[in-house]
Image 1: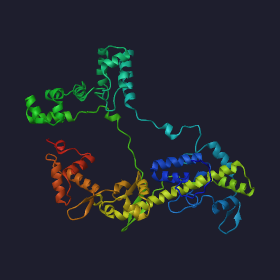
Image 2 (image 1 turned 180 degrees about the vertical axis):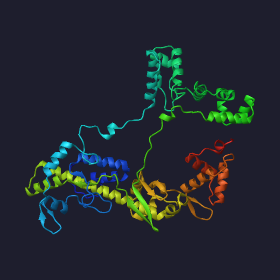
Image 3 (image 1 turned 30 degrees about the vertical axis):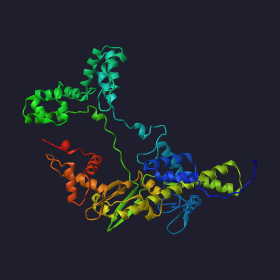
Image 4 (image 1 turned 90 degrees about the vertical axis):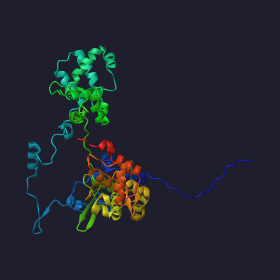
Length: 496
């Protein structure tokens, strides 16, 4: 068998993901905050990109969700404004501006910016973000109390070690007193004494090692003690039964009437089970919708939200520089760089516009399929899959999936993620179908309207849904209830 080399010419087709196509796909799946961050980053990296602050001029320069532009033409308004130093008066004759601009500018420079003038003050002044005060955290709050209290050097060291070992709920569970004693070189008794002093600081019962200790510290607070012996006995010996709501068993073990147990339980329920609750509240996350659906008369109008998204245009300075180099037939590296940055800027602008148009198409298609939802609410949500919308707008399912991920729509019924409108169908007894989200809404309303002393079990919910024409299994009801974050009927029951 002989081996030899030869040349062959073959023709084949293959799909190549160009950098521009990859960028377009990436932009399509970004959420609104991520898109704003990317645009800000591109404004810093690409000198040919500028933010367009004009409100009424140069419509072909800024990003619009309606029309496309190439980003390289110079606005006629800009060329006229730069070439004519005169004004046209009412009678049509040109006149020079007699205002003393030099004196005005000199006076303004000396006096500094006026409040509300929009002129930035000294560049060395701190920004707004640097002057904003951050909320005090738990460690700072406790250490401040330790420093103003009568702690000696060793006790303060032990207290700081304990404070920095406290968990998110305010409990000291990851480390024991002997371990702390070995770490700081003190006795376990000394650590226990400092720990008890810390538990009396604000918030009360901080650094407790379990729920029983936290509740006990609260009811024995010298400033506001709870002296009811039944309350103290339940916390000390019957807290586990109380968690299971075994009130009759607690009454038998304590020898008290059931009504007395109920009253003691009310007192215990008024205590704080999470000592650090005031310092663990997360900052609210605000959702900015990507698209709006407004009802005007009997019709719905869909519009893309461009507020807060920087409007981009091509820098006039670099456009002029590129034009001069073209006339001079310059073949330097500077021209190649400007040309490459220009193409990148144009593609970014087109990709953003294409993203906005695609979101508009998908939302219009969803509106067509889910019109009853926009009219009557979530209980009238219809079954819908990605393929239905993809076939309607003649796009691939993966494109629709990217568009609906982390995108939100403002509707007359509230703000929803676009993926909310895609649900599996559940058959009704009358032959129709209902979306799974609509079934969840019905289950939630049934539980909200139930008698709290006699909550409906999952089987009872199945029967109530069957009366409404929805025939589903008990395990499906339990699954939907758990997804809604609703407890079982035994834990929802209120005896007092």
